[in-house]
Amino acid sequence: MKIEIPRDDLLGALGVVAGVVERRQTLPILANVLLETDDSALRLATTDLELAISTRVGASAVPEPGAVTVPARKLMDLCRSLREGARVSIRTEGERCIVASGRTRFTLSTLPAADFPSIANEDGMQRMMLPATQLKRLLDKTGFAMAQQDVRYYLNGVLLELAGNEVVAVATDGHRLSRFAVALDGNEGEPEGVRQMILPAKTVSELRRLLADDGTMLSFNWGERSMVAAFGDTVLSSKLVDGKYPEYQRVIPKGLPRRAVVDRDLLRKGLQRAAILSNEKYKGVRISFDEGIFGLQAQNPEQEVAEDEVEADYAGEPVTIGFNVGYLLDALQAIEAGQVEVTFQDADSSSIWRGLDCEEETFVVMPMRL
Image (tube, rainbow, N blue to C red):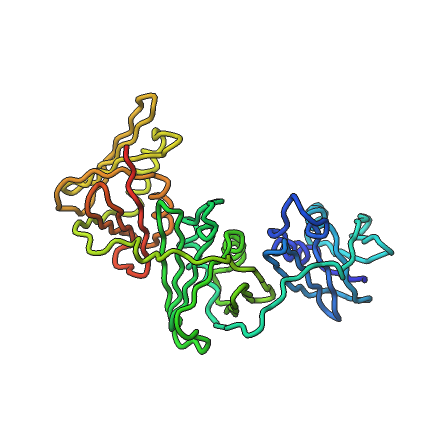
């Protein structure tokens, strides 16, 4: 194999695929990136056996097509060390790979491209097209609420629910829940009935990192055990979490009698100030809903106390509820509207947070005892 490619293009492509590579590997080849050439382009691919990402980049010249795998992180670090605008040549010599630019030359170890594993596509996959920015919003609005290494493995990911022309994303860790829905207008790939799939946490993280807020269209294919997302020159394949997601609709409270509206930025800044003196372990904050105000209070075992007030539109009976301040800040970060609507029943029940008039989003937060 022999190829010449601009350093900046190669580094950008490595940045797309390198996130899959873990520092500790069960198989040596999983630390490598597959370099595969054709007449005019270089394809790069990485995998951890559960998730695979590949991308293509145009090459200046491909004198000798071929394929090889080399250590991914080393190749990326070598490219970073070269000057911007440099040209890079990559060629194989026996069981070694030579990476050169100007007077600089690196010799890397290789493993056979034929041994590089792949995630097999399922037969009969369903397909839909949607703007990449819509899938990114679905995951950005919900991904923060995923469980982290929970024994209930089905919570360690984001549920995608497809029904008719609507896609719903849901995530929960048992203490909070986020739900967001987008409509797919006129999508010819609409699935029949309701289809659910659970995207693993690492897959969610990589999609959030790679998807751009531009006009790129995304081809989303799914089966019983895996999914494939293709956008631009990049293809992401992932196994799905094998499990049944809880009936999340039961967790979302209905008919909450009390309602308050508050400026998102003022509340966020107030919570950030209160969090400074909150208990480092439990991160608790008390919110007192009173006539025209949100009262904020946090304290820690050293008896240090933070108190603040934020103007709010509330006219009900006074209620004080304890919350994990981190959960509230995560929800406020996901809310885009300038005003936040909070609905609740009492101090012992879950509350719903969402942007004012943003019915497509729902953030459920359970109370804390403080």
